[in-house]
Every structure is written in structure tokens, then in C-alpha cells.
Image 1 (cartoon, rainbow, N blue to C red):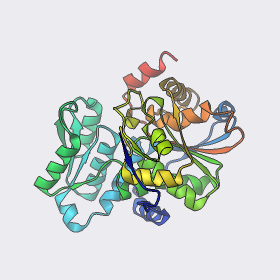
Image 2 (cartoon, rainbow, N blue to C red):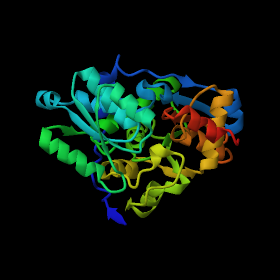
Image 3 (cartoon, helix red, strand yellow):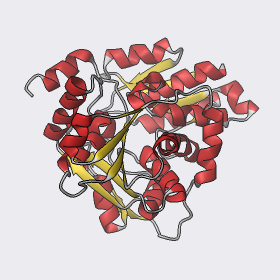
Image 4 (cartoon, rainbow, N blue to C red):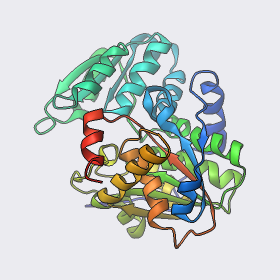
Length: 329
């Protein structure tokens, strides 16, 4: 299934939007470190700069976009509150952001979501509404709650304020590294990639921007090739944060105009990257967070000698699950 989006669509965000988000996040979001590893450079045959968003508040870059979106609410929206649908990092990002803003938050989550994620979302003060992912539509549930209770819906990626907030990760990276030859960005629904690509195009137009998605769920790669949004079945991959079925119209428009290429990595390559990050760099990173890392290692011949930025997007994975994944390696 595919939906056409014209090349002439004006992108939903520009660099000024990211700069505005940067100001809102100042003193609220962590300015995460940029990590280096001689072993990683040798493995990738390049100079790698890891933007450590797994050390961000709530353990993922999602806090940036969630907080920026809620900070843009008007007084009426703030009084009523927010509703979001997510089984993971976006849920926690909205829950914490709402608590910081003194707002009500309702999060629609699948009843079979990991208990650790449900508990964390409730721990930030959000009301959790559980649903059956096989028989119910989470977006329809969210819209119904919004209409009935006056809440504002903040989707996980297809929203300009969310996209702009996510782009601040790349802006901080460039502040520290200066111009890079290549930027590798994990890709699910496209919020992070669209924000980061917007920054790269504005600051360093010669920097090649590449999105990375799981091989089992390459809907964005197909979409870029066809020039239209391609929807797929929920992919079977350990990169649960990238188990999206399609890009959003807003994210696709930006990606189509500002991203150079999309590559894929296998689950086995993700496990290799997770194992490397844990054993050599002492960093606890979730599978989705390692998409860019895996791509850097898998494409060493193509990118040899380049200065490469790698967005490490998150670290929210259950410890037992993490151990079971890396144990065979």
C-alpha cells in the first residue's frame, strides 16, 4: 500500500524551529555527551562520534520532542492536559514532560507492554489506559479520549514540534564536533531523522545524512525509492522502537527532501553492536539505539576514513532481555 506525497510539499519544520526547541529545552533536557572509542574507530575504519541519547532523561531522545511539544501548549491546552499513545519511550517522555509542566497526562498503552515500561510511565504520574493491540486501534482510542475530555493528542513522530525537538540532538552534536562527513540516525517513524536532517542541511550541507532501519522493516527505504509512503505489516525485529508500519506524511516530506539515503541492518548486526557498546564502551544501549552503530560497523568499506556522527537513540531495555540477546554473542 502506498500514498503519494509531492516533492513540492513545504517541509513541516526548518532550522529556526529546532533553534526554538533548543531554547525551550535549555536547562531541562540533558546535554548528553559525545563519546569516542579507539576500538570503535578501528572496527569502523572511521572516526566515530557517538551522541549518547541513551543517557538523556527517560533514557531516550524522545524527551526532547515530547517536552518541546508540551511547552508549546496554550493555557487552555495546559489546563486540559495531553493524551499520547505509545508502548515505550514516547510514553515516558510525555509522562515526565507533563509532570514537569504540571499537566495531566493520559497514555494509551498495550496491555501486553513490558510491565517495567507501564510502571515507569505511571511512576512519572501519568494515567495509563490499557488496550488490546490485536483488537483495538490505539489512535482511535486516543482521539476518543481527546474529544471526550478535551485533551490534546501528541503523536510519537508525525508532529512538527516533536520533530523539531528531536533535531536538537544533532544540533548539540555539531556544536561539539563541527562539520562531519556523515550522520547516521536511527529510523522508525522518522521524527528523529527528519529533525536531524533539517539541522544538517542548514549547518553543513555537504554532510551526508543516512537513516538506518531494521532490515525486517524497511518501509522508509521502500518509500524513499518509490517517492511515496509505503506501509508494511508490523516488522519482526528486536529493534522494538523501529517496529513502525509507515512514515508520517510530515516526516516523509522532510526525509524525501533532506536525507541522502536509508540503509538497513540485521538483528544479528544489532546484537553485535550492542555487545560492542557494552563490552568495549561500557554503555547499556537498547537494540533500536544501536541502529546507527551497527550501520557504521557494517559499512566500513564504504565510509572508510570519514568523520561520522552516530546518534545512539536510547537505552530502555529490560536487563534480562538485554542479557538474553547478547549472551549468544
